[in-house]
Image (cartoon, rainbow, N blue to C red; front, side):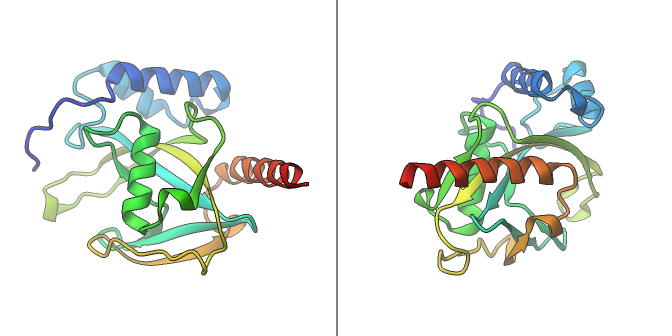
Length: 205
């Protein structure tokens, strides 16, 4: 399917530390990420290698505007609206770096267009979800263990230009948070957005 990957900067030891730190802050999420924890405990293959089964680490970027809208992209191969994101590459120094890189690649936004919301070493959310088989890539059904980070758009949707990576993405939209299908992550994302907007207003007053 894929050639052997070069050595990774993000090790399984680092992944365990990120997940442990997240669960220490959010112990109520233990059941949600149980498949991830079990895969890490098995320790049979590198978790950032996309060939690792039954699952491997991915990252996602939740980009919100000050007026509470979320950026979604239309993913060609899956035929679904998704958040920007993807696999961790060997050059990525952390899951956060991977999320930021994927965001900029898929949307054409510049680094100056986004600001991280929250703790740089603690993702907003961690999720475990199933990915359907892809015969074209010889990929069986498998898990994605997704580190999700929140970013604020430094601008107004529609005036900050989005240039899509057309090989994988063919459309984008800004959708109200309560319509974005984020489930239990919606309240957490709304909270960090409110804090950021409040702090920005206080700093400008």
